[in-house]
View 1 (cartoon, helix red, strand yellow):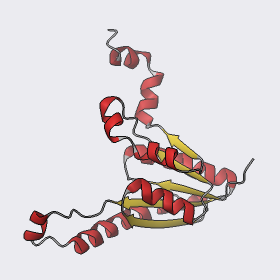
View 2 (cartoon, one colour):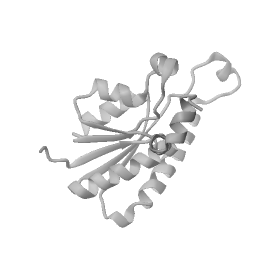
View 3 (cartoon, helix red, strand yellow):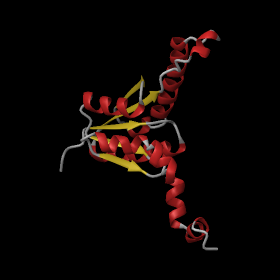
Amino acid sequence: MMPIRRILFPTDFSESADHAWMFALQFAQDFGADVHVLHVVAPPPRLTEAYSMNFDPAKFAAVVTAEAETFLDRLVEGAKDRHLTFHREVRIGVDFHEIIDYARKHEIDLIVMATHGRAGLRRKVIGSVTEKVVRLTHIPVLAVKPHTVRENLLRNEDIEKDLHLR
């Protein structure tokens, strides 16, 4: 088995990501790996109207980045009892590009990330960040389904209801 020394956990701070965080932490403990926590902020809009309203993209990016850093600090602080080594970073850019770039530059061995379980036309048109990362990187990716999807799969009555069998 390949050694897992560095795990990347990209987060959007969603409930699904919180669920995947538990997997990242457990794998890190099991393998004695460092945990790299990454959040990607979308670039500020470049609309003419925004500039005419005194919109300052640099100020916007600074505020959103500072807020994301606070959330990362809280996430890591909540796991300090696990005695793991954490690395945090906030980047501005296209989410899947930044995740793949970070993983390559930091020689990540495993990426653990949530999937929101989108289905139907929305998934076909937009795609998911997790799916793009899986397709575009050679690094193993553990895609963790949202907790609510897993719970629904365990309850027959919800499946019957979702499939309109009742």
